[in-house]
Amino acid sequence: MNKFVYLLITFLFTNYVYSQHIEVDYKIITLELQKINEVKDIPDSVIESMKESFELIKSIKMVLNASKTESYFFSNTKLANDANSENFRMAQIMIGSNDVYHSNLLKNKTKRYFTAYGEKLIMETSIKKLNWILTKETKTISGYLCYKAETNYLIKNSLGSFNKKIIAYYTPEINYRFGPKGFCGLPGLILELQDDKFVYVVENIKFKKENLKLKKLPKGKIVTEDELNKIGDKIKENRKW
Amino acid sequence: MYSVLAVELFMSTSSFSEQNFDPDSPTTCEECMGLAQSYENLALFLGFSQARAYEIGNNRYDACVNQVDKYHAAIQG
Image (cartoon, rainbow over all chains, first blue to last red):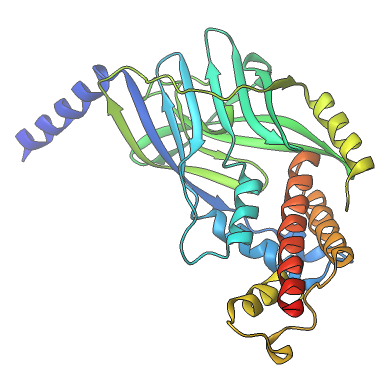
């Protein structure tokens, strides 16, 4: 028995040490949205439809491919056969499953490739500006000891500014400093990431011996958050609805 | 139910009958505009970004108008 455990540990350790990149699958858990029941002047059918989309988000899987210096975060989930396609499409928009995040620690940059207002766009953010607050709080996820870290980011929309708290659990046992949605720069792989609506939880980690294959990324116009909002304002003036 | 689902259900039947069409379903582009606006407003209320809220509303608008077009084409025959 002891010999078996020793061999297993040696195998896993060897795999980890010689790995050139990792492939991590994340499942998504949707947090209970009490707020949706407080909304006024919205038809019940719209609320029900939105709730169904939140449920459908659980069937979307996200993938992180990372080397020691860069990562790609994206989804490879296609439409489930039994899903209402409109609600599933809405789920994809809500979670941003058509977005691709490319982070590069050497360049201190995360680029988000996405489509909005009918345009292919790229938004750059600085990794250092994430300003993580590291804590001593721990929990074990998939057998790895993880530490809690927190940061914030601001979302502005026409109803006001929403300060989003991000909670990450990372493990120093896996020295790949990346995680979901471009959140990275912590001293280890993020195994769980939570914002105000969703939790990304690791499901599977594969250690690969091959080098990380560079992903072909779409071209697009580089925009800042403010420029994106200005495009939105212009669209609002001219749109049909 | 006030949704394009009813129109989809209606369109999936091979022959048209007034009886199998939900009267609450949108039948005009104006109704689709209202529907899209409701989706966008709900998304904004839930704290989605301006761009995501717009995409949610716009996606619903396109789907709704598409179904309304099919509905009118079926009625005309």
